[in-house]
Image 1 (tube, one colour):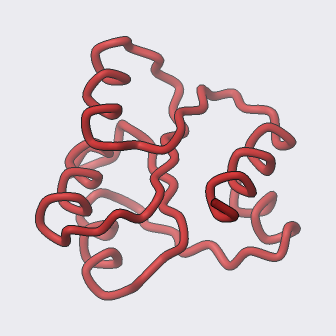
Image 2 (tube, helix red, strand yellow):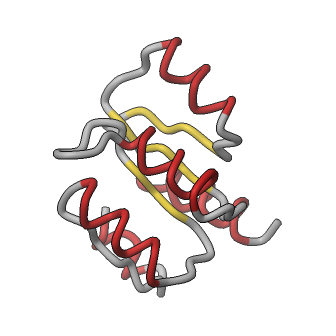
Length: 104
């Protein structure tokens, strides 16, 4: 995914796990956050909750995950997630979704 983003001119910041994601979000501003649901240490939903509740940020969030559980999607929608893409994803779909979320 980072290769696709870099080819489009974006500068992705990668977090290896939920702990890293929380630290990165605490110290940086982003136009968009892309997160997987299943991360070591903190789930993607916990990362989103931290962004929304603790940091009080309205940054657009795109979930890209292999799991399309309706309950997870409902929780994500409650946290005002901007989009949800299931893996394996089409790179063109990803690029189009990112453009639509950043250019809102």
